Amino acid sequence: MILYHRDKDGISVLLEKRSDNATWAIPGGGFSESDRYTKSGRNLKATAIRELYEETEIRIGEEDAWLVKTYSFPFFTYAVYAAEANEKYTARINHESLEAVWHSIDGIPKEANIMTRIEINDFRRRMR
Image (tube, rainbow, N blue to C red; front, top):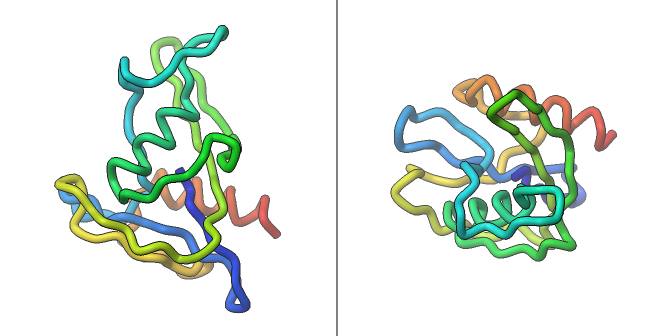
């Protein structure tokens, strides 16, 4: 989930510093059987919203999240959603994160993992 906020300084995104490898990443994770299903299968939007909440305690509504893109493989689907935050909410991290910080979309840390760099760069192009 790319959680972003716009203000007079531009667009900021919330990134978490992962506890398993100390890289910066967008909050996310895998589908759980507790996530809802739709007629077409797994509700990946519900997964993204749940993972954002689990990792930051920031709650957003399903109507606030929109699909940025998906990658489909034979046994795996990777989906990226985004949601705009009304303010730069303070995240409460869990055991999966060392910290969570808002970063300028133009100033992603060099320690960001490769997928986060790709997703943020693609997202930045869509937002301009």
